[in-house]
Length: 167
Image (cartoon, rainbow, N blue to C red):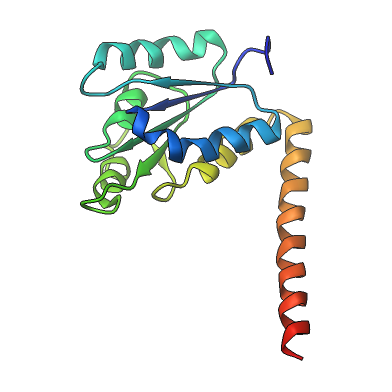
């Protein structure tokens, strides 16, 4: 995807979120969705977060994924500075198991939406971003259809294996 302008921007609140975000990166790579990644903190680098959000659309970004734990204001701050769709990934913390981050994302005020996936749900965030892009990209829609078919076949194979082992 080198040389292709990114369509998805992933912003994580700290480097410690990278292990979770890897699932989103792998999924976007598999689907061939060009993307970029940044580390920026809503609290420690608020001007940088605001700039990334404000400039994203002009750079060709079409969807933003924001991963953060604890207070998890990153997705909301980004959403406040752009009209692009923002998908939040609540990162599981050792103290509250991600509930704190989840609540920060799902309790956005009226008029500033953030779509939110499950705690540590980076793959689903990437799939949701791809589905948004696939509305106007038939080739990407076909890749998503194929991925869904592979998932169904995997379940069918596991079912057949279990039934054969039990007989």
